Length: 170
Image 1 (cartoon, helix red, strand yellow):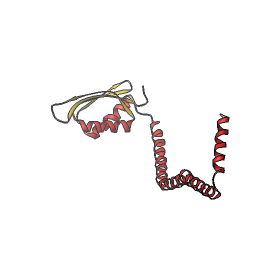
Image 2 (cartoon, one colour):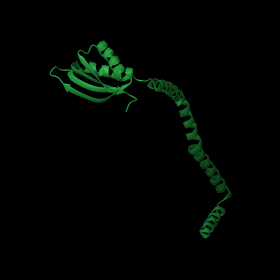
Image 3 (cartoon, one colour):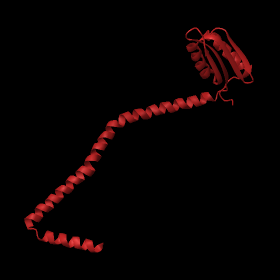
């Protein structure tokens, strides 16, 4: 492989020596100009354009960082609120009963099952029931471990049965 390099170098040297002085000067200037063009197009221009793009996007990125900070604070607050002990058993039944009365969902029956509470309702507006269930989940830190919904003849109404237990229970 070294022999090939030597042969190529010798051929280039002979070719260069065969050129006139003026031609050598023009070739050198052309090579210098080509080198400057390559350096400009490969190194300087992309770096300059990239830094301009980064500077333009910086305010948006700073706003995103601020949003992430707000979300992190909210997550810390939610984590702290998750540490609140959820009521269970009869205390949960009493809290859910008061909440159901305030929601005016009609006749609803509650039964305590160890730490969980079985909630049964007939002919309730399904949208109102789901809204109440979501509110109960947030307010009392409970989760549904079983649910059954049966449509009624009346549009938008259903018979529902759900078992709720404190979110920390297994």
